Image (cartoon, rainbow, N blue to C red; front, top):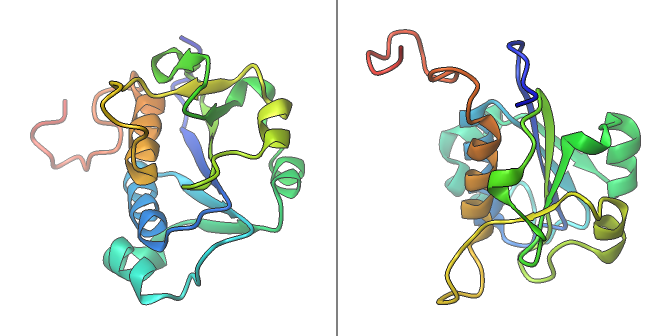
Length: 171
């Protein structure tokens, strides 16, 4: 495992999100996991919409949120190493369980109806992951998929790194 004992840095990137309540739920999950949420335009709803705020509850104002005009601008500014990027697609060759464990990670998801754009998939074509599921469903909800991938990326970083010290269940 490639992990450091230093501070974790997680970035969840939604490229062209279309559904406001998914984004609100993902924002709340990011806040709970200590991750930054990045939205890449086009965004299919207003960030001021009642539905986003309802899904994010009263946590939405606390979400570390960055908006980008395009994916290339995000990559140029954030400068992730290739091994710090994990794209998620239904037909990804690798399982989420094979994702590298790095101190800094960029977890990239496409829109609810279109997935990731071909140029994004081509750029990081060795780093495309899927979440295993039965053939009984076509796909997972985007907010569910983000939650699975985000918390899997944190696995192994010590007992309850995110829990408050007063939590008796944490060691």
